[in-house]
Length: 386
Image: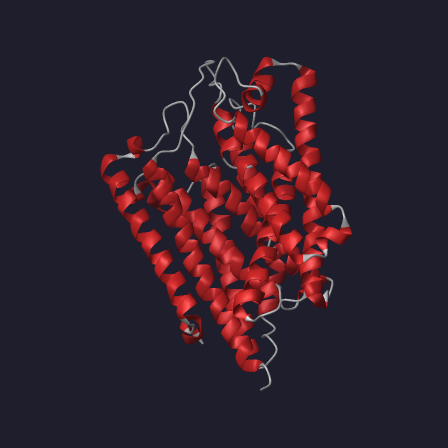
């Protein structure tokens, strides 16, 4: 069956060549980081998490969002997602792979990753996060592979895979919940220490992930001649609409709590994001751009006539992804360190090696996703009547 992942035309091989080039560039940048240390990055003693962990946090949400097609299809027998569910599961595989690679490059040395595996500690949230991510990767890889193999043989999936499908639903929620706990459990970081962080993560995940899945489904329809179904795309558009609305509500709740309470350690991070703090305002333009884009897209998505137009829906989904990439990326991660517990303000700017390594990791995910989606398209093409 794997040979189906490598059957494509000139466009397919050009895309693989592009991914390979970006991976090579990222690998060379990582080799430099490996020999010189994390000093080649923009991170510092005061800002110890940066671009890598920002991508990790965003992509965990993308991975968790697969539950938004798995749950309706398998638990509620929503047949419209029948052709979409495999795309969601394979998107989760690629997203989790990238998450684990971002943890790997952020730790600086491979031996530190081995410490998590060779010397596990139940008190370490990083250990639990690694375990739930690894488990979710295996679950989606097994479920997706078994399902598509059964489809290739024109037979129903084996019964033993259904308990794994049911298990993957709460597991999807757990991966982003544990990620939120990584932040919320740090008492010296008041920007993150909020009980609403996990629900906020999940709401944003159920907006960004389905948005990306919609874009991928439209691309596969355009270039792969595989249609996941207009009803499925529209149903995902509805999910994106209300998840984005809930996420914006959660952001407003956070703002009200911090600003109305007036406690400096809660106010300062939000002041840094929206107005600048003591002359430091590196993230202020990004914050306003992200929040404005998010509000505009959420309002337009509330109009059903706009959601029914594929071109408009794709544009709005792209806006949602960009907005949440900013909000859950550097805006969330970096601002947690500003100001420091001692009141010091140290700003952060990603360096060229960080950007190259980040592109390399995304290229690995893109390569995996290209191969998996090509496999699905080729298998289903062979099943179509002549």
